[in-house]
Image (cartoon, rainbow, N blue to C red; front, top):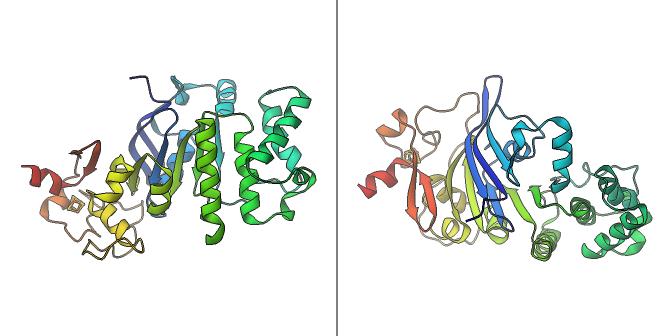
Length: 312
Ligand code: SF4
């Protein structure tokens, strides 16, 4: 099998005493969409920024297109950025209010030396078509658009350099519910059409299920469950994933583990299993020992002592 487009191993990030990301491994095949899901404070957005080296990892390897990004110097990293773009949560803060849409879409091409001046303008016009905005929008400014339209412009900008990887961090959670589905459908269509690989971050398991081939669930900086999205969503193996699903409306009435309390501070990660302070199934061993990842079949795995005890 060929090497995944993005292959992250042992990725960690500490901010003074805070361990925000702890030993994350991710392998994302070319052309697939990989979802990272978890509550606010789980470390998923920090992981996204580490992957693009927008912040520096404390340790770990980030192989992208066969090269270790964590070892690249500034110039080589800048060149590599053409192939990896980000879509942010807030379409109001992420677009420069002083730049017209045409300038917004031409700028990344200019920065990365893509095309001639004429080609860049033609690409800007084509991108607007792709995100279903009228050509008249080229001469307008961000404040003239709604949130959904701004996010379409941000998506067009992310595609402007024809990147191989797009990292989308909660790209619809700031939008009205009525436009979320439209923007998600657009992202899926574009991803199909361009065969772009996507790392998709969301707190909403339904959104991730809709978008992604594979899902990883994060809790306090670690991946606690990972697998094909149909399996993780249909038969979650970790009590935390079950609890997250329990909060999804319309997800069946059967009795599931309830998620109580707040996610603990990353300053004070519980001993043993980090989820034990909220886990309704916790037992003695969970306080003493951190659970290892355990295969549950079909490419699904989770870190919980109960899986090991059941298998034994
Ligand atoms: Fe719950 Fe223990 Fe499993 Fe952690 S290891 S999820 S505390 S049962």
